[in-house]
Each structure stands twice: as C-alpha cells, then as structure tokens.
Image (cartoon, rainbow, N blue to C red; front, side, top):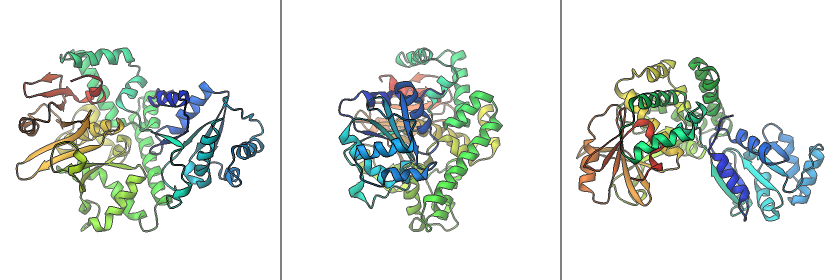
Length: 440
C-alpha cells in the first residue's frame, strides 16, 4: 500500500468538532477512491460505498425526500448486509458528479451530523446552473494530487528519518555527500520518467519494468481522452482533445514554452481555442503558469490571463504523450537541448503545483530577463530558476539586485547544494520536494 500524505488530512477532518461533509477533489486516477477505502477499513466498522458510475441505479436512493432517515433507510434496503450505525459507518459517495441529487444531499448529511460522509469525484458533470442545489457552506474541500516525489521515496523504501537527514544538509547549507546525492538524483530521474499516478508508481515498485509503466501511462491518457469525449460539449470535444495532446510539444519540443494556439492547429487562434483551455482547467486536466508584468506582491495583480504556460496535472500523462525513448533518455541522463530543460522545468512546476502554489513566470523581451517560475510564500515573492546543468542564473541575479522586496531566490540544478552572496540558494533538482521544510 502506497503511503499518502492526504491520509493525515482526512484524519484531521474526522477529528474536527464542527464536522461537515468532506469533498475530495482532484484529477481522475490520483488514488482518491483507494485512499478513502483504506482509511475506512482502518477507522470504521463498516463502509457504505456508492459509486454512481459502477451502480447508476443507486441514484434512486436520492430520488425521494433528502432527509437522512429516508436516505439511510433506502441504503439499508439496497445493502441489507450493512447495519449503517452512526459513528461506526462511513458513507462514501464516489463519482458523485454523476448524481446531482447526491451532491444536494451533502447539506442534509452535514446538518444531521450523525454520519461521516465523504464524497469524491471529478468536477466534470456537476451542474453549476443549479447553484441553489449546491451545498455551499456545508462541505470541507480537500484537493488530492498524484504522488509527489517524497511519497515516491516512501514507496521506494526511503524512510522519513532518512529524508529528515537530507533536509538537515539544507538547514546548514552544506553540500550533500556524493553517495547520497547521486542516489537521490537517480531516484528523481526515475520519478520524472514514471510520474505520480499511483497505478504507474505501484507498477514500477512491483516490476521495475519501464515497459509496463509505459503501458499504464498510455492507458491513463486514454482514460483522460475518454473523459473529454464523454463530458465535453459537442462543440468542445475535438478542440479540447487537440489542446490537451499538444502539451508535450508545447513544453518539450520548443525553446519558448508559452502556450501557442498555432501549435494546436495551423493558424489556430485564442478566439477558437481559449474556451477549450478553460474546460480542461475545470476538468483538472491541466494547470496554468501565468506571465506577470512585474515581480512584486501581489503577483495576481500583474498576471496576464492571455499569456501562459499550460502543464499536465501529472508527469505520468506528459510521458504518455511522448515516445518511450524519452523515458530511456531521462533514466540514462542523456537528454539534451530543449527537451532536457523542458522536462526539468515541468518536474519543478509539477512539485510546486502539488504543494498547492499558484504559479507565475516573468519574461521581458526588451531587457531579455526571464524567470522560469515565481511563487508567493509567507507573503513574499520567491523567484525560481531551473537549470539542467549548473549555469549562471543571470536574470535571477539581476532581478534580485534591483528589487529590494525579494530577499532570496532559488536555483534548482543538476548538481549539489550551494549559496552565494547574491541571496540565491542553489539546490539539487530533487530538493524542490523539500525546500519549504527548511527556513531560509
């Protein structure tokens, strides 16, 4: 069983006094169902699980009056082997987007407060036009992502004590011993090639066979394409799929990683495709890194909605869009050119996205200054450069020198820990998973 951080947050929700229903959001196949099932097995006497895709007829449970007593009675008739006892039974409504009345019922479960109710599913299919029926104020939300690099290390047998030991080198700004550093870079390259989709990670742990991992990745990508075909409007189906499948080319095959509609279709324009990007965003199939015109707090005030980079919500899906040979080059460390810089930039943004950061970047054609990623942390603007080697970060150095509001920045490299007098903290690429655990 893969250990996931999200389990800790579910436990906090269970222990909270003013309990609401818990809605676990996130992209498909990130392990939402598996985690809830395992949590229920370990913490409750029984679980009543209703998957509305698997058992569409279960919609009938929510077709009458949405009182808790009525719904529980309907569940007991449907599942006679279940006792459904308050405090001892978890009710898990999976793929809840398939049943609007079940979404509405969350308000009444929360008001009753006798049962712990978790709902999960995609944002796809939820009818926001029926706004009055959505249980605003009666649910807590938890966003779930694919496996991050730290969780991958747990799966590979690296203990939390060993990770704390590595973080100790960051606290002292000391170089990591080469034996540890080289092994961590090896793990990081494996993670980049596999991605964080639990099925792909588990397959690698079980088999160590990248061909088997590749098969899983391509199956997952097909599932995402199926969701586009199933949920997108007739007008958006083809356009959304074209936009999505263009991401690998946008991110890895060209020097400028700005999303360009001409890469989706010859002569493509925002007027035709921007609605498709918005649909993919709502579907948790991609996330954006927006250009800012100035590097100062609050970055969102300077963000441009029409100038952005678009990333897959997990590296597993990006890998599935490319030939198997890309994984081989990553593992063997033989990448070169735009692909090498592009893939490591994707890995860094993936880590930051899974930590919940809003992402921005900066590019000034006049001054030729460019910052790969910018985040806001503890009310401060933090610029980040990603280098496939250990080359100079001239843009980062210049911007920090001329902006007194920025007290430090990061340069993530294919190398070891280092610091400079200019306030730039140089860290190995894999440290993106731990950089926020250490005070600057």
